[in-house]
Length: 277
Image (cartoon, rainbow, N blue to C red; front, side, top):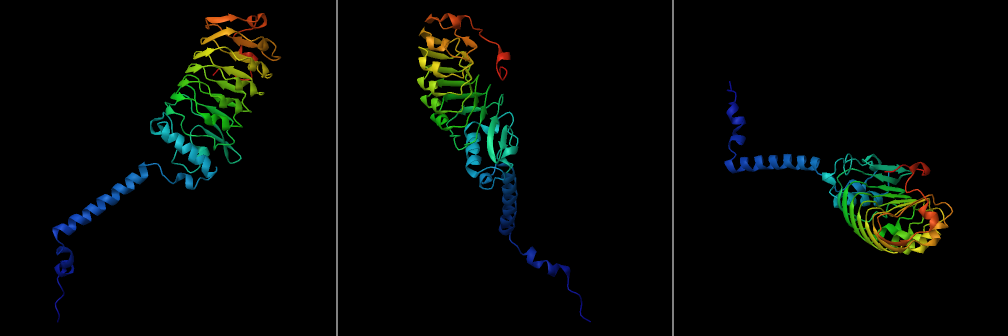
């Protein structure tokens, strides 16, 4: 009768592996585990190649915004670059498969607005107040033809307000209070026929108030206090049919103010369609 083979023979191939081969196998296993962990913890570079709910170019614009404004350090970045449903990202609202609103206030957002958001062609509201954004206001704002509400007060923006702002034909509210903006008010603001409220208090704006603002017939509130503006307040502002609030105090070089404007209240948000942000 033939004797059964020893179990030791069955494993002789494994036992014959040299120490170097075992080391290589262990290293491969460790590398594979690290790769899985890294893939799970790193935002996918391909997330915008397959967004479920918005065009690829809109996803790419938001991704670049996240990457250039310290996204990983935001106070709240739920869903960003993780969920392929862009409209589920924190602070992003959509309608009809387009991004229509971004609201990321009090969110520790830093850096500059170097990233062009104009691919968000249906964006109606951009609200980024009480963050740490700085640098110049970019020219691409002029390409935001559907933007109605721009609220970025209490940041660190500096430099002039670009002439390109006069191309935002749908703009209703602009709120840039509490920044470090300087230079003159652009005359192009007179092109904004839908403009309802302008809030530019507590900046470093200088020069005279352009008479072209008197062409903004929809203007209800104009807040310009605590800047370095000078000269006479244009009489054309006193003729605006809907103007109800006007604030110019804290501009020591202002030489004269039309009587009708002197008698207007400096605040009164019950007269507006929205409250003070």
